[in-house]
Length: 507
Ligand SMILES: Nc1ncnc2c1ncn2[C@@H]1O[C@H](COP(=O)(O)OP(=O)(O)OP(=O)(O)O)[C@@H](O)[C@H]1O
Ligand SMILES: [Mg+2]
Image (cartoon, rainbow, N blue to C red; front, side, top):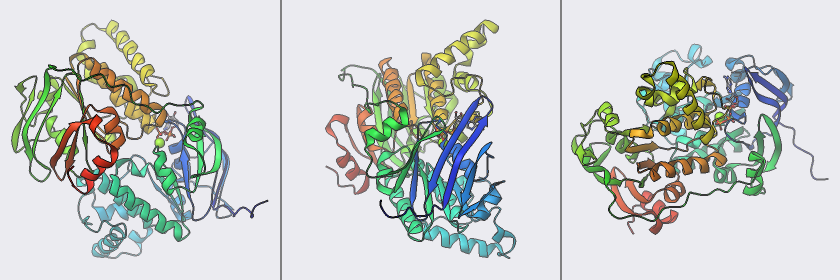
């Protein structure tokens, strides 16, 4: 017998949550100790976000009990959960874009009603919290909608800290963060856990779990298949096979040999968007995958957006198949054969209340429009094929996208461009595997490579350097708005790229 088990801060038993047609949680158990980082792992759709929404008071469980701080609790709504001492940072951030940073932090706060008499006071408190998070540069008065994804994440964090919570739940907090920002997030997590606060941490990145996690609970199909495993003492193979019920080979599709003489589908000449990037020139050939590596804020997403016409450059040209594309006009870009899957799928890419079928076929509508009801059937059949090849779950084309798990929503965005690939010349992907589980990543990589195999050029950005190196044929390293290196992916390794990204010591 070892030492007695410490009394858990949170004990969830037999939690069941049924949605129409889906039993998202089918009897989940979870024990969380004070001061620990408890990681929740599972494939896309396993039930992680649903479980934490139960904890946040956003969903009412159909069955099961929750004991928090030794007392049975009923978390009747978000306010009840907050009062009990549970703060949540959601996967899809729930900030109000039109309000300021400070207003978002103290939204619905008791202090907002009783404590702060003046706006200045709330702003001072906001500044202090942001400073604690290492982001004193974010102005409390700035509208949240104008912050980049990583900045929104920080505001969300500040809001959680503002509640003096005993448990902070984080649903994929690192998905939008760059390398150094993740380090900062971990510093904050260590700080709060040292003070006895428990953290429930969801991530698809196993290396993060090893670094920050104490214990792990694995969910599969709405059940806990393993509870409280040691985060560092459990092998990756074991975790992955618990998650998937099979052994997954975590591999990239083979690269075809580079061919000479393939036509250029994209040529970017000395493109500049002052404040974001300068003098960017690059080419993508038919069938080639070109990856941009760089930190969030290095200008990489802005480069993609400008190529796609979502931003108007100050200088420079974008050419597709040798002909210039009208700058700052996404309509022109699409007509010339560009497709883009943006970074923030929720606000930029998906019609959330529409069905999977509507979202997948939206880019190919002209193809289905001309033949009346017959083409509807063909559309549905095509959509079903995409659902199957990407393993979108549940495999139901008529389900509203808003009810899909985060990773499955990401697959819907990709399915759209697969289906619309008939006239596609260049596919632009910003963080294509953000939120996608390890099992499904390999499938996505294969799909991207297959598209390239059809002669489409692919230009992608990923924060995960191994992904850029494993998937791309050619890699461009971007630092502070400039391309500092261009080369064959085979000639680079992770350390070299990280070095160029961070320090700037060119090799
Ligand atoms: N509001 C809802 N209505 C209907 N079904 C839902 C709803 N929310 C979630 N689901 C379903 O419940 C299941 C679990 O989803 P959940 O979002 O909890 O998964 P997850 O483990 O967080 O996945 P991911 O890693 O992709 O974020 C999925 O099948 C999802 O489609
Ligand atoms: Mg989720």
